[in-house]
Length: 451
Image 1 (tube, rainbow, N blue to C red):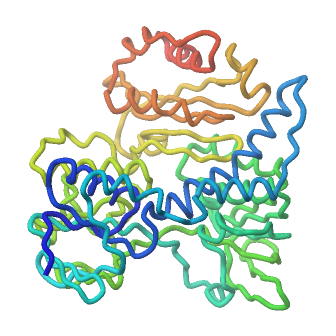
Image 2: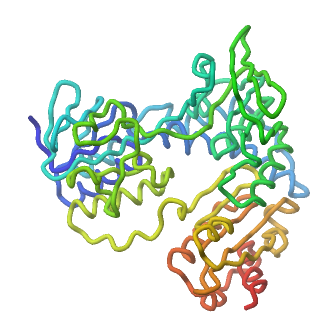
Image 3: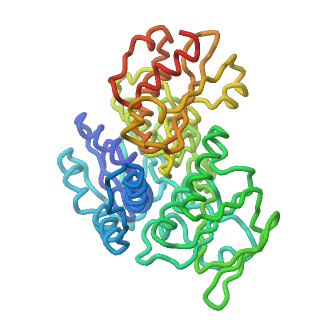
């Protein structure tokens, strides 16, 4: 039996960070990966989807700048660039980072077989200090009659297809659904998006949802809200979706963006009293409540299904394992910074107005358009935009922020600092943005508030 101080199961972003951080602290560490080091984000989610979305966004921005032309898309070149971004699904470039930190890579499927015991293939390994679950999540395939048999695309096929489907129906108007609908429509596919709720990205501000829906429609996407898929069949090379709340629709391919499921099945979690197929409940140290030697970071704990938050959780878990104080956990779950990379983009952190009120906070929202400040003359000229701050009236701090418009993803970090650090409004008022940038919207928002 080989022994390590720490065994990390899962080589995605969260697993890599906790392995690297504990390795840098001098512990002996092994990371187990059954597929590709780098995980879902690197090959099947964040990176390839942004590679598909960026050309359409750039073409739209070119069209907004007078005197600039040449925004036509070369689909073959875009798909080649997507493959380059994901290293053609070859993880060899990821390995030196682990090697430099002394992390051993064990290839294969891992299974918990007892206290601090992990089996990989036919070999059992001991973790003297901790086992860390960083197995991520899979696309959820709901039990809609005929869906599984129709061989639907998940995010994996949706980000890695070698060809553009002539037509595509997308189930779900969450982040995966709207981003991939936008991407494939920009590349020439006839896309229909079905969302059972009354709006797309229903977790964000209603105004943001409306602007994203408008943007998808301009892209040519047929957006149908309040429509539920109740039956699916594939025949004669096409997929037909029977709908409740709207007409049936037919397309060459169907993509499912209806949530995620944790990868805890077949992992042996029942040996420590956990339920296969369920999220792993953790405390503030990311320690499982089932065993003090078992940690869970990233999607598998269900707290925030975002790559950057998985990496933050990994830093917290690593610090707990090596005995380093990580300080208070300031942001997690609904409070996490998040971006929807459609055109327009939606960048948000903290509460929406509705979620703040649901949390019992005494809040007020103030709005302004980033495109109306001087910087809007140069970036996002004439495009739909919105900026909103949700202010806690009792503490006079920002508890939520939402920005909508071209390239607003870079806005959200300043908002995250304001929310996490609970910066008083009077201090924010003196954090002067450079002129002429769209960040001047912060001053306009605070002026609207009454400063």
